[in-house]
Image 1: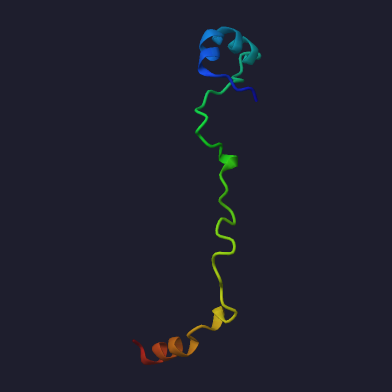
Image 2: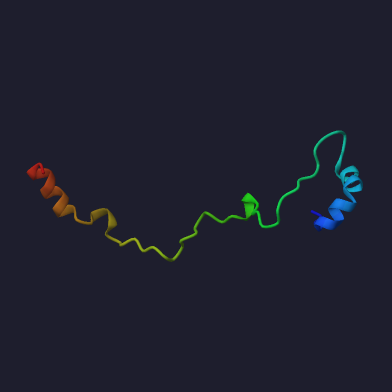
Length: 73
């Protein structure tokens, strides 16, 4: 990927367009540099090490839950 500053892009737009064009298909994309590409955004595992799941998670409060079901509350 080539990066050009705004001055170069303005003064050489025709030449840059010719270099980017190929058989009438779009070959160039103009974006602000501050815009993140989707592949750069890390979403998976973003809270690793910050959350602890107890070993008895599947049994937590089972007595209280059973009591509530039995009482019909």
